[in-house]
Structures are given as structure tokens and as C-alpha cells.
Length: 279
Image (cartoon, rainbow, N blue to C red):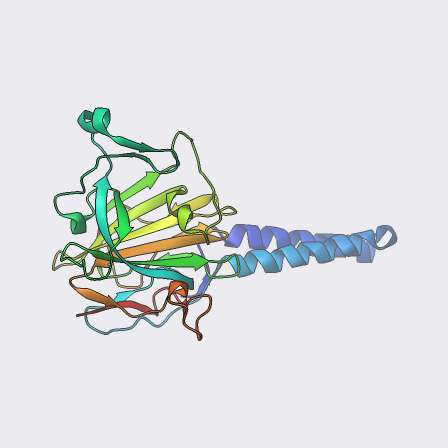
């Protein structure tokens, strides 16, 4: 049922109550030279802003077989075919790890099966003509402060992994603007959704410069329907989705395609828009 996202009712009610109380004082006690009315109007404006941010509308979930739906509202920043070039090192591999000031430590070899997404991996774009069966498609969706910020499951399946990562050497951050490609290394939560046929989809919720709270409502082991709500990011942010390129093709257009109809990238909706269709 549509309405407000989890945690949204209390702030909306609080600001609305303040607006009503201030207006009542202004009408029946004293308006303090008009200042009370101004304060009441400001509280009403805050109520509208918070209500808009926490809105959580119902969405029609497509029933097409095998598709991957979008987990977030926003514009598609880019669609890219990628290959893994490294992974996070284990404790025993730290001595030979490569270090990057922005992205942290990397073991120079990817996972034995990159498409299992068993740990966070380093990716690069695949040059034309060098495609392989271990490539992944990535779609990055930028969520502006005006978009719905509730995230939804891209497929029907089980959350097999959910991990929180912060910036290199920091308790939180860094907080680069979410519309920049480098924001992929902001504070983030990486979740793996596994379907009954063992297909795995990787979804990463990424905080932006304004967004400082990623709030999952589910956890490892939970079974979700396609399009079911599983969390949200507060204020402007970004969500990246990776799927095996051998099994899917993109169904949306990113800003990187320079398509005249989508200068900011195609607008997509969580749960309703198909991001990938099966080959």
C-alpha cells in the first residue's frame, strides 16, 4: 500500500503539528507582529518537503519472464559493459595488494567466477571486440532529492549477502556528488539477490554528498518478491546494478549514449521499469 516509507510518518506528523500549533497561537493568542504566521508557513513548507521525500507510491510490477527491474527511481547515468580486474584482498593477501588513495586496497586478480560477486571487485570498461562470457553489464541510476528514494528488489529471490563499506581510511565517506562516476566509492551497501536458478544480481546503494543514511529494511536470508521494497537512501544518492552480460542485454538508455531524447539518461522507476531483458 502506498503512503510514506518506513520512518517517514513521525517527521511529517511532527512538522505538521508544529505548523498547526503555531498558527493556533497566532490566531487566538498573538501573531507577534506577523512573525508567528511566517513561522507557521515555514513549518508547513517543511512538512511538504519531508512528505515529498518520504513518499512511497504503489507501483505496477511487470510480470515479464526473466527480466530485471530497476531498484531505484532516477535518471540512468550510464550503461556499461565491464570486466573485473581485481578484488578485495584477504588478510593473507594484504602484503602484495595494490593501493589506491580513493578506492583502497586491491588484489590484482578478480574472483575465480566474477559473476558470483562474492566480494567487491574492481571493474573496467570492456573495449569493443574484447567481450567475454565473464563480463557484466552495469547500470547506474542517479536519484535526485526530488525522486522517490525507496529501493526495490530487482528480481524475486533471496538476499545472500549484504555488506556495508566506507571510504578508504575514513569512518564515513568520502561523499562525492552522486552524479559523478567516482561516487561509486562513497559509503555504500552492496547486496546480492539470488534467484531460484542461481542467477545473482548485484545492487549497490551509494550515498551522495547530501545523503548520509542508507537504511536497509531487510537482511541476509530474506526472500523477496520482484519489486518488493527492501530499503531506502535518504536525500540525493545513486544505485548501481550489475548482471551477467552473457544472460542479459540492457533495456534502458544512459546519458553516456548521448541520445538526443535522453540528454540526462532515461528516467526509470523502482519496481516498474525493466533494466535488463534476457537474451
